[in-house]
Image 1 (cartoon, rainbow, N blue to C red):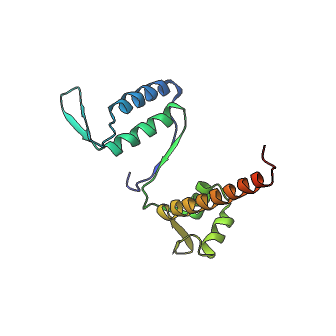
Image 2 (cartoon, rainbow, N blue to C red):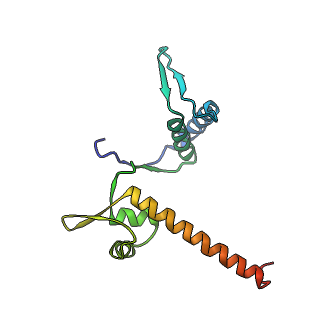
Image 3 (cartoon, rainbow, N blue to C red):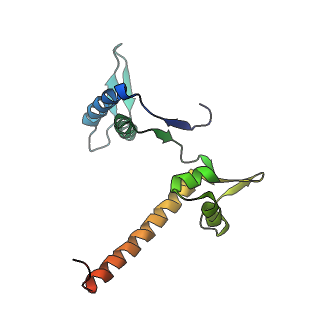
Length: 149
């Protein structure tokens, strides 16, 4: 896997319970102090896992236990405008507009634009925060007008 991108996948239904059990077992190994966890293989070898990696495994296994497919991408991955639009749940033309309006950084590769996943996630975080502020203000106005019951 040279691209660093794991394509969407789903787990067979008969394996969801095994994923759920593994998620529970690994969750029980986690500590609050971010201490690495040492796992022992059947051969007696020890494998030391950083706590953050173990948390990621638990999250992945939990999704798989629910029968959900996953896509795993490194933050430095470059996405096409269609992939980025799909991640934001918007149209590709809307995403291209964000790029043209300098709301979202991108670079050109030939005639195609590429968006860094880290930039896309930063944009999403900013957009979500702005949306939260607007929703909070609307709720406050509704309450002050006595319309919220």
